[in-house]
Length: 54
Image (tube, rainbow, N blue to C red; front, top):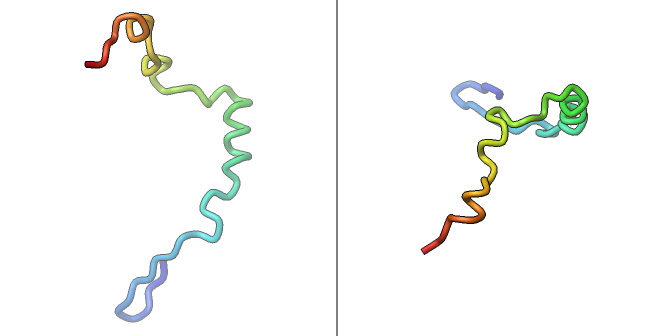
């Protein structure tokens, strides 16, 4: 962000996702890439067998 007299200029960083690949690799190595609520958001047997769309 840059301020010039009465103007405020907001520009994106040069590379918005710089170093993400490395960060995700490290997360996976450390086992820190799991869902917060486990697999509760994944479909269950009931979803597969019983759920019907009308």
